Length: 357
Image (tube, rainbow, N blue to C red; front, side, top):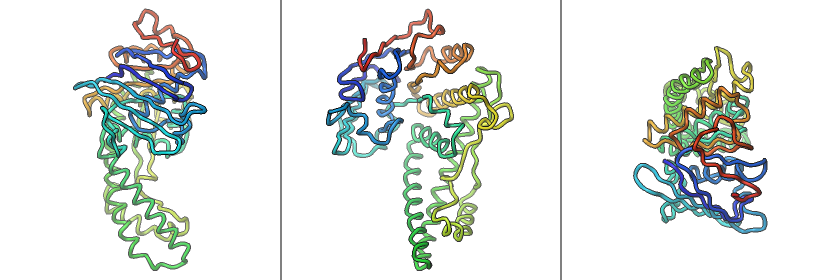
């Protein structure tokens, strides 16, 4: 899979621009705040239907304009495809795949396959469990469409159950407790299925990332999924027995929405003991492993989007990365051409103030 062409109109600091890509390595080169990351943001939106930088899509519209339109042309193993996204200030965004309007975001997932690494990814180790769960949800949704469907069902049930608990708490009595038992059953049914998907995926991720990380750094990397439950019955029993505490706190306390991932480097917790360089290398190993699993499960190798990654890696790790990507489409942003690309056939795309020069 590779992107052939990207067109931007009124997107961020791009008034109107067409960019052509090589099927191999592409380097977006330029000073800070010129628009390099904006290109990656647009490409990411074709894969997931939303930005990785903001939840307010209207922020992507060029200042003073009423809409933005972006479209992409790419090849997969079967055919040439196109995706078009139009974001308007006062209406719902419009998405077309090969010229046909879609009504559900799930129809977009798995069409264009990408794996993104950007500077804030350090939060995958440094921040709380929510960030690691989000990483899993994004990775699994791209690889296994059924997971995205299950996650949506689970989150809807979780919201409804939380609203019911808050209502019961405000009433100070339990006139709707019978209704709660229905939500308990549904929460446990969907919840345990999510746990199984996540456990299976993290086991695969660990096996692949462990090999990559050892080759790149000589260090041992271990990743494991932390959940309290192996069966639906265990989860349901815990949910039902914890109702008093849930009523006190006004929310659902048990289920996959509270699970986490352990990331261990050389036998020590990466969050507490790893240096920033070790953390960044571990996350890169996880991202490369994510790409390998996508290829294994979908038959398409994803496009790698690497935002300002080289400046934070030493020469050995930069060289390793370049050796891993020669036959895959990669789009990298950087301030200048790194020495590891000397003599390569990388496609250099110079960016200045929202223009390709």
